[in-house]
Length: 401
Ligand code: PLP
Image (cartoon, rainbow, N blue to C red):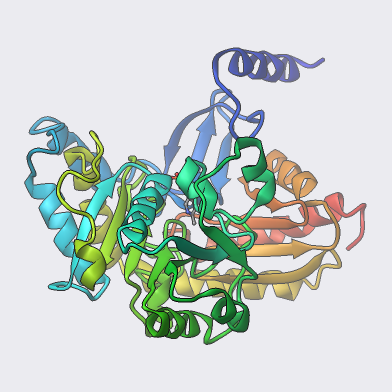
């Protein structure tokens, strides 16, 4: 065993002894990050095309986030939820403006995407109706309520019984949704683009149909924008490309610039279904996290990162298509949420080969790589990656191409 292999094995052993497994044995212990790169404990640097799983919208250690955080922590680091504070109020107002629902919405802050969806499920329960319709292969988190919404039986079965009343229909099929929704349906819960399922973009008109079906049946439309929101798809919110407004929007990931922050936005009647005392969390809306989020929103706007994400994302898709590599079946995505579907279950091998070449990418499915890089990724780095991807794919695909 080389000394590098020995130290990797020691790190993996240490990790297994001290930390419960989440996504499996980590290949790396990361020590620092700056912009689009991260550096491991051995001093190797990687281009982070996973972005903390769609979290690091501004990249790592962005000065605007760092100074907002350090300023806020020296001023007021925590308040109980008997009180509010300026960063929380400003952030709520800004999110409502960006969603186009100011004057007609209210925000509940929490600490993660799962928690945001738990709040959404509680809002749905408060309609007095028993059922929720969600989508096959959808992912909404792993706490018990969020897991009930998640349409992935392999993640659910070990934890049954889950909260009841949730059924799942094929994603993207408006007729199936229409058939499943009735007067007992409290809410339809969907991702505008399914992230964990492999970056699945529904057919045009699907979200508009979901809006219409919800309205016709008196149900809420809950859109989980945990992965797609805050600029990830080139819009503040992915629903904005469809010209609809949901009743509930859930957010996390990119919102806090790497700090734990989730939000559940209620619009119209959904903003008033939870009454005082019915739901809360100790750390939700933490001042430091809210200050970081305000810096994220300000920077996305002032640096034109929505347009940038659209442009560079399209360029990555076009550049991968231009490779005409035999291992690539399809490249798809919106903004900086991208997937490369491969010929065979070679995504893990490709991700490993990419890591050896200095890139972090994610095998989101056995046959699909996901890219969710910082929105600040520039064209030059993106093109360098695509050039190296050709080699990575050839290696993983058994030398072809
Ligand atoms: N919803 C979606 C669409 C997600 O992609 C995720 C995480 O990947 C979640 C919810 C859960 O978020 P968290 O891991 O912050 O609980």
